[in-house]
Length: 275
Image 1 (tube, one colour):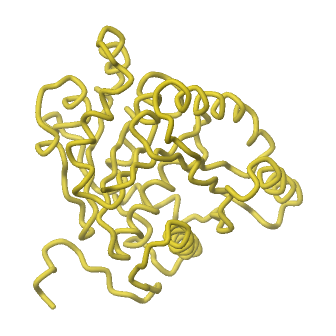
Image 2 (spheres, helix red, strand yellow; image 1 turned 135 degrees about the vertical axis):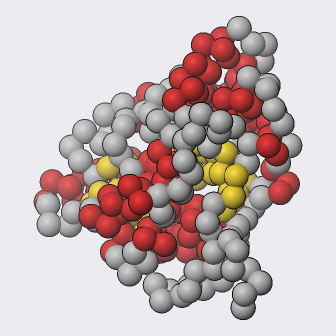
């Protein structure tokens, strides 16, 4: 049975989607079967894996609205073992649609139960808010990964996020836990950033991943090409960091994995039977 993980932080611009997409991509390359669920109306995870947001695209909104079965919405990405349930701006209307539905907090949980056994991991990229969609994601999830930018205001609002997690755990999902905290956009040349990093460790203790994600121009460029960093520039500092994070994540979960390096040839869809 697959593990469902939400990537959540109500602050925008903290590297949440970047972490969800690139960790998922590396896990797939390392032999795991992974499904990304894009639960952000901005659809950045969708475009970040190269899916074009056309009008005819079936999305997570169609699932929440009950218009089609989940199998019709799941799309393959270029990487073998990595699929996605896409999102577009239409999803913004889902918050309103959900208000009048009975057991509205469990809509997503019921949808994902249908495909949970088909994947090792289902990764939910939440929108930067703590509304009904994010509550749905937390209710459906086994755990939460919190990406946090190493900047002065990093811990601002984190109490609100932790309180939301606590309330969901108490009322809706007793098994919900914090999987870990990922420090993002870290620049070791700044004393302030290093101090903030230490504050994050002090607050979350062992939940903080040892691996941190540095500021890296190649990471910033990759989404505009519709590619995870493992395909865009596997030798970059950003790629090395996400590979390290994937290894640490799998080690924490006690899962054996296929060792890869920046020189490993990535198998793409359509090449499975080509040696």
